[in-house]
Length: 126
Image (tube, rainbow, N blue to C red; front, side, top):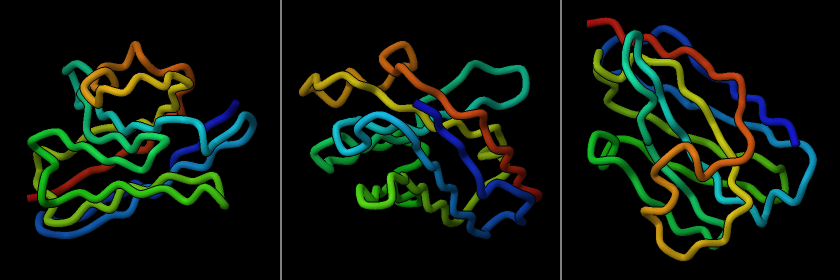
């Protein structure tokens, strides 16, 4: 299974970016897909998850600004990020989990994911 994230870039505060993650191999529709981010010198943080069921969950920092979605026909997951802030600057990673655990909080940590993309850099200038 391979994941490729793209769509990062440089944007001014208040702007928007749309990240996408293309998944090849495996059975995409059965994966729970997550987005994480890692700012320089900081640990990797959970951003958002969309379960195989379509249920979505967000970190508090992302609620109301970010929207995660998936297209099972195209094997892609997308993170629409609006009203970006300088503190959103980070490398964003997509990840896929084969787990079918019901609880959403199960997917808030990176160790629950089996496959990772290479990351895409998002830089938000003030």
